[in-house]
Length: 95
Image 1: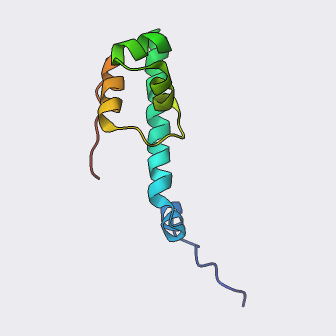
Image 2: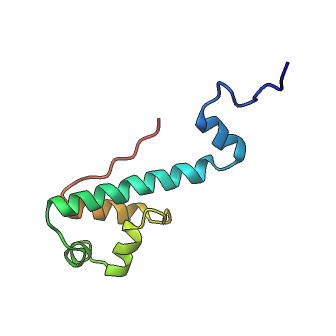
């Protein structure tokens, strides 16, 4: 009989946890979705990056960091301001 696969039946989340990258991967995924949602809302409301930065009272380069899906080092208050600038609110919950 062959060697049994230790990952058979486990979830991808379990695999990431075993590899020690679950938290980083989750943070990157959440940030990617938020950046995509903000870009979609900006497009729907026809808000340019310059207008968005002005509404948030920030710089265009800071907005680019917010919209960068790989940058997960964005402060919560900045994300709240970005959501408000496109007429939305940011919700975070523990599950």
